[in-house]
Length: 277
View 1 (tube, rainbow, N blue to C red):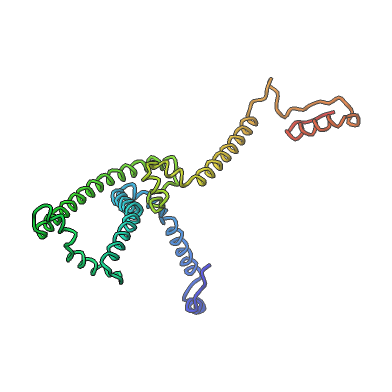
View 2 (cartoon, one colour):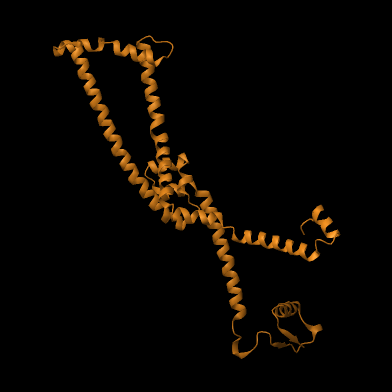
């Protein structure tokens, strides 16, 4: 019961607040609290309803972005950094730059025409002309790489859409599957990159949990089947019109029963039979 305040106590003592009024107030507060509790929605169910309904496209877009980010980090960044670091170190050594200043390295390379002189002489052109030609080739190569990246991005977009679609079917058999959460797992991403497929990658990275779940499910089903079998046996109609609990007559004197007979009688009594002598 709600604790009565000092002000309410005084009003009650003066007869200005009746017991009935106070109890009515408490009942109303309890009713309101219960109504609020009943009306509170299941947050998880509400979330599932939203991501599969009104906000389905927004949720899938977020998963796409997460998958793209994970792929970019895992497939390109490490290899590219290692390769670039090796090249930079070689150039730093060539131009005798000791402090690792990349800006100084860029300036040294741009000012160096020595690597073009021999080639320009063989072509019969000025070194500056050849340098401009090389610059055009570099820009063309950059454009080509940009186009290739765009194609790769479109291919990735298509692949991710397929994963999202396949994920919905996979979740029907494996309710615990969460594509967004698994996309944060590098092992899962590497398996997808290797062509394992969505189901294969999930089974490989969640093998132990899936086996445990299957064992628990099999045990649960076995228990349920055993219980159903026992119920069916108890409800089976008695044979030959005889009651399952009909009396069994033993004409032997109790003192003359063997241990085996006594054990058999105990079993039959446990099943509900009435034994007479």
